Length: 398
Image 1 (tube, helix red, strand yellow):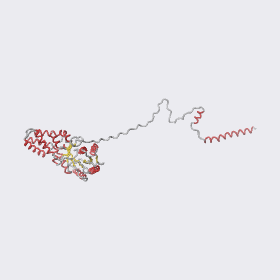
Image 2 (spheres, one colour; image 1 turned 135 degrees about the horizontal axis):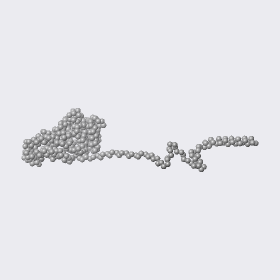
Image 3 (spheres, rainbow, N blue to C red; image 1 turned 90 degrees about the horizontal axis):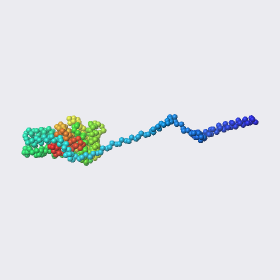
Image 4 (cartoon, one colour; image 1 turned 180 degrees about the horizontal axis):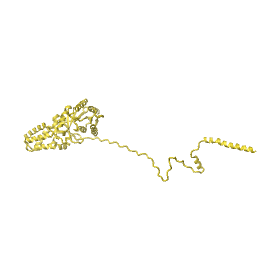
């Protein structure tokens, strides 16, 4: 009996152990226990749940320490505002400019007129006095020939009138000066288009006469008169001249045709400028050429080439020679050479408000047989004026 009980106990132990072994894999197949479930179970059994341990690289904050600063995005930098487009200026018209600028002209010419009137009103018009009058005219850059002619005529008129009255003598002198200046010259600047082709104005001169500045001021004057203008930067040897021309053009809304390559063929640039002017329907194209010494044959020949190439579009309306009025008789020598290469149609006298002597107007017109059409009377943008003989003579006499 005892043996039977022992055997039954052993069987029972085997069954219990075997059942446990068989049930364990089945429990594992039902699903793993979720993380923290043991803690929850312990809490359910009266234990305390603990938070998950922090990562090893994030140490716990010390008591009383300031919280870490928040990482914020860098502030947005506002874009720089675009540069304002310069306002297009509206230049004043050409009419009346000479009268408005008369005071500037008078400042430089008063000494000339005062010397003449002083001699004529002295009451002693003998041979020596007339010689002194002739010297005054010559030193005013009038030239020996015109001075002698004017003195001879004035001497006869005073003798016939039999007067030494200052007002009468001044009137006789004024009439003679007007005749010498040439009040009957056509001084029109031809800038009107020819149907679908613009007028072409070629501006020439030696270095330092203010040629590029004259182009800019001429563009302003024509725009003030209601014309549309395109500028051709054919002075390709001097980058500053091209930039200067673009500055002048931007102020009045004009266009500049230029080459992207320094030292490009000036004739090609001039041709393209006229082509662009025709395509855009502008009234006038002003071509700025490189300043050149009248003694340099090669450069003068190049100037002739520019004119010939431009004339493939049609006749050139104006060839304006820019002369520095302060150079006096030296300016006449320059004018002679330029007139041999290109047909000069008009003279622009710059710096006439400075130390220039008014006689240069008479001398250069007599030398070339072409009129002074424009005069520069200051450094302001609108100080280029159509030449008016009456206003000029009145300023000379004071």
